[in-house]
Length: 337
Image 1 (cartoon, one colour):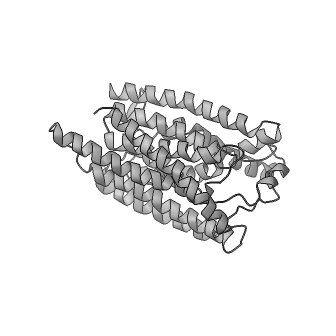
Image 2: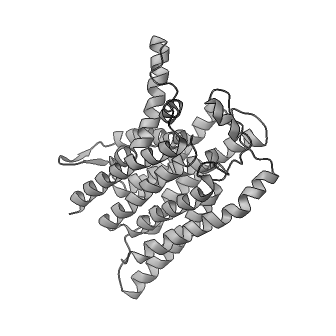
Image 3: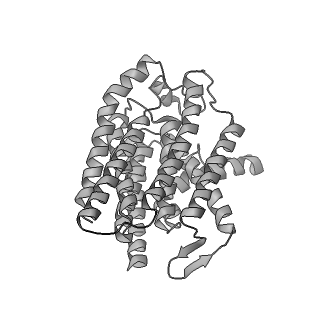
């Protein structure tokens, strides 16, 4: 399959996201859908008070549009060259995209309560958790019927079949990483740039694995994140909100699971993992020892309070993801070859 299809998909996604931003931001300002910055954050973050929220709709729209374009291009190419499509390719793509949109709806409810209902804490934590659990269960049910795989590939050791425990392990991993991506959205450009690199890495991983539908999906997410960064680089003109970060969380998880190399999730997504674990460590340490390990959690705030600029945090964290992505691509190449 020619790589120019991916380039086209990425370009379409970038253009849709960037151009949509020009119309969306004024509309969000008109709705007074501005972010409220809590007092617990770094004091200079208060300068961002009122920045429009829910800008994630830029890359959500672009991902859906570009993924559809990519699927049509791949299907057309296969018909012209008499190449048979993998069984259930469209359904598998729809499963990952559908789960991402499901998480997006939960994030949107959170943002809506914050900016329209003016309740700073957003969606009730228990209700939010139950909704996330419901989407996760539905995703895993779909996964069971479309994939039916219960084994995990361990590099250099082979596959280990976990049976029914696979679904329990993946439910925990999905919930954790969806929320980890949400935690990563705390500095201008950070979540968008890290997810851009993560998705670019998975674009190549899926090419190596011959999964062209998901390769186009990963490219669509990467292009959408790049288009969003046009508006989200420091100083941000818009935030993605939980609407966007929850959607990206679903995409991040869907890519790793669809690759059949689930261990790439904590590898290529090492920044998400670090963000979540810093929160867990901070809370655990304070409850057990009444002492904090970090100046503030998640960890990007620790570096922020240590004097790092938002640009430096974004570039360093994205650079780490580049290295992790390269290792993920290498692991996929070994597995495929």
